[in-house]
Length: 332
Image 1 (cartoon, rainbow, N blue to C red):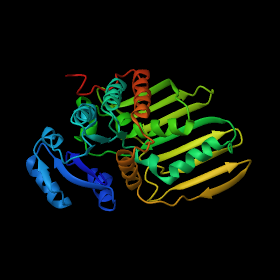
Image 2 (tube, rainbow, N blue to C red; image 1 turned 90 degrees about the horizontal axis):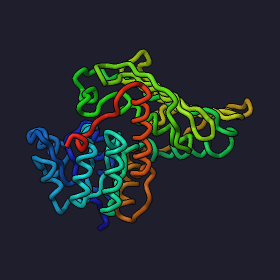
Image 3 (cartoon, rainbow, N blue to C red; image 1 turned 60 degrees about the vertical axis):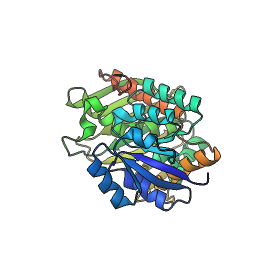
Image 4 (cartoon, rainbow, N blue to C red; image 1 turned 120 degrees about the vertical axis):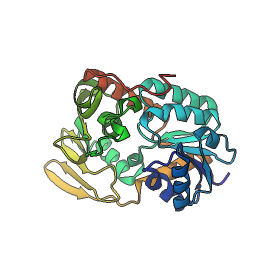
């Protein structure tokens, strides 16, 4: 196999940017099928994006022997269930974030992927851009001295009141949809798994957070803070900061740096700015996925990392006096 034939589960709004456009410029990926619960929407999506095969159910797509892998951009509460079904059908999976609804689901997916010997990769596209590699290099190089504090923000407004990301039964909430990025950046830059010290939320509706803030602590004693929202006075802030004994790293827009980003490093009172050139985060992500499928290359966001991320998210919900999300596999 010299090309990965990918089926898309659902006609999601994110799919053109995250999968279809990168696939068109890739020599190792081809989107050959889409499945949608609304047949008319599925056919329109396929016609617009040049996808040859349209299925009226996810199971029908998974049964296609000419599909090697699936992209799963379904609602959060369905990520675990549909990824498990894809693995049972012998398909590799690129699953949108958050990986599952909770850590228990993530463990089940991890075990299933290992048993099947298939690639399962969470779509934290920011991690595959050269900027992310440079951030990690600076944070862990010793240039800043011993790390004392890591802080991340993922705040944006979600105006649509009936958006599925506000639905509790689909594992919605600001921490799930936006905060999973902030947690992942904090863990990545901290280089260790943190414990949750405290957390506080503001709810959009009962059980659904619109704002979440959490205080964390790393095994070294360094502190961490996560701030995330989909509706708050902090309308838009996507950033990361690492403070060490000798200096600090500050990055604006590490999630989509191809559009614009700003990175400032201050060490011993001397400040410098760096720009890291690179293409679309989604293109790097798809290249990593196909390399894993075709050549067995390791990924930066394997299921073990996803399990760890979901554990922190679950613990933040508990610390805020809320319940971790419930996925489709939890309800049968």
